Structure formats: C-alpha cells, structure tokens
Image (tube, rainbow, N blue to C red):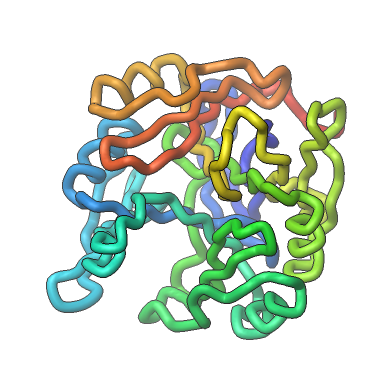
Length: 286
C-alpha cells in the first residue's frame, strides 16, 4: 500500500483536478528520484508509454548505435528508457524498471553497502555530466540504483498523470531490508498506521520516501523487488488503456483503503509496474 506521492523540494506550477503539480528542483539524500526501463524493444516501449502517459521521447546518443530515450512531459524529464545490451538479452534478463535513490556522495554511500549486508552490482561510474551512479543489492536481493545528481536531479515533475509517484520494496526478508536502509541511507523506519501485514515507511527528513513490505504468499517464489508506481488521473481508464496498447493487467484496479486506487500492469515487453490514482484527502499520519 503506497504512500501519497514522492516527497521532494520544488515549487507548485499548476493545479490539476485539485492536485498540486510540482516542478521539482532537488531531492534530499535518501529520497527516490528517478526511474528508468531496460527493455528488449525500445521503439515498442516508447510507443506503449506514450499511449499510457503521453510521454514524448528525446533520444540521447550514449555510444556507438546506442541511445538513452528521455521521456518528457511538457518538456521536462520524467523517466528514461533504453534497450538492453546484447549480453543482457542473451542471458534472458527480463525487462524491468529500476528505481534510483538520491545520495549526497555515491562513492561514500556505496562503501556502506557491504558492511550493511548488501552487495554492489555496479561500482560507481559517471553518466556524462548528468550525475554519478551505482547499482546495489540489499540483503534480501532487492536491486536499486544510487544517484548523485549533477545536471540531472531526477524527475523534474511530480503530482500529475505519468509522473513517478512511489516505490516500495516487496521483500522476502523485510527486517534485514529495513535495517539495511537505515544503515546505508540514514532513513527512519516508521510503521504505516493501521496497515495490515506490517507495511512500513522509510522516512526522509520526516517525510515518507518509500515503503517496505513482506512478500505476500500469493506471489509464490517471486524474488524480492522494488515495485514502482506512476501517478494516473483514472486507474480504471489506465488499466483499460494498457490492454488496448498490448499490455496486461496483472492485478485489476482496487481501492487500497486510504492512499488511493491501484492496479499492477505489465507492458508488452514484460516489464511490470503499478499505477495509482491518489486519494487527495489521504495523509498517512492524519
């Protein structure tokens, strides 16, 4: 059960349907800030998410015959898509959305990973002048990226259809995962009021940054993973649109009993994501 929106520093630029649309200017240390998708079919994914969220793509060359497809709303970057390298395709790696957490110093944060029981999948490296990143794994094997911003802070917009809204770790060992988040990012773990199943927030400067929950039994042997949510104006319509565009509704829209209406979807290439129509009256702590 997600919280309500991704906290950030920024200024309100519009009001849509009673919700604040924010132009984000910075993210604090420990706050999720960006999502990108590694896919087997870049053109197909661009088409699907354009239909879902109205994203416009700008392809940025990243090497010989490779591009990073920046997804934009009103000219502002909100997500990224890239085609998997040949070795990932050959290994059968499924398409997946990867969440990034902003950190003040990616090298210093990466150094905390192994002592906290995690592992480093990709050591820190620079992404041109955009920022510096690493990819890490928590003790329950949930994969997340670290992001030290330079020219690119993360998603520049929040609170409107098609923007990054929330991320949560669905874990086979939530206790070790929570301890890891505290040690590596310095966040505070706070139970979500009245939530079944021990759902907890990790708090960044007193504000919910994301969630951690026990993997439900009905998921079977699905490994630990971060579930990422996009804000939508109408959850039912978004689920229908996903089907029209060749995607799959994995969990039909349902009311979470507070934060909003949620559905779990899969794009035509196989990447899984969630959408949430937030309840504007919801506040996790009253």
